[in-house]
Length: 133
Image (cartoon, helix red, strand yellow):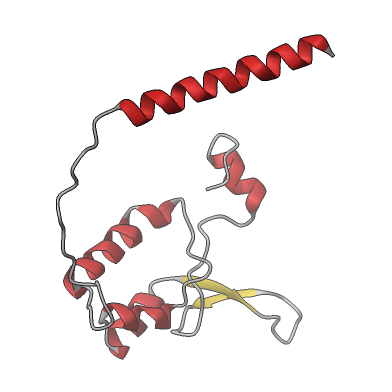
């Protein structure tokens, strides 16, 4: 019990010393920055958002899925219906069962969600050194 009390008091003393050091440090003046998306009438730079999606599509989606992103959500980035259909058609999604009870792959449509690059979580972990992307 005595060791616990001493350890607790030592820990509290160390924390108080760290806090005093942080308070004593000089305050840093942050520059005033204005963003186009601030406020109720703010907007995003659509070209930059589309470039960000392009990076995700070409680089990040090789390891990461966007299971909560439906292809139709790309309209929020300024893509029109034909562009969304073209982007979706490049991906294959599992569908089914067919008349024989088998699952099959088909080109994605706008209402489909972005497919995962892996069949399941175990395959994803095996491909990424145990980490689930």
